[in-house]
Length: 128
Image (tube, rainbow, N blue to C red):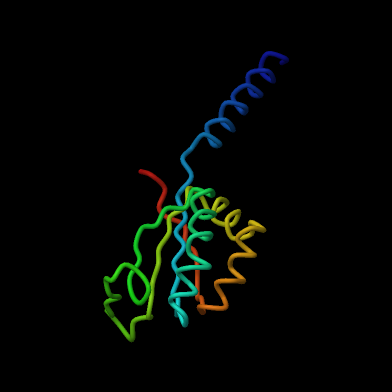
């Protein structure tokens, strides 16, 4: 009986380790941003925000529209937003860690002087 219990415990531990070892899906932050002061936004917000995003594993996937790369947001249905950014984070936890980082909270307050944000996050598909 003790051998059975020991075997079950070992199998359970290996199963838990396998679950924790599985690849977590990435998380994507999608932002619709209306920049009201491109100069202030580029000077006071972007450099600091990019640094903090990178520190949390965030990677810029796409940016388009006013005050972005020069490429335009193309409407498929309805009216397009003025600016769109998409960032990928390693996990949803990493995305939330970035968003709640006290340094980013301070920088975001600066950004809100120059822009209006509508952001949301989605979890990507797990690796197949």
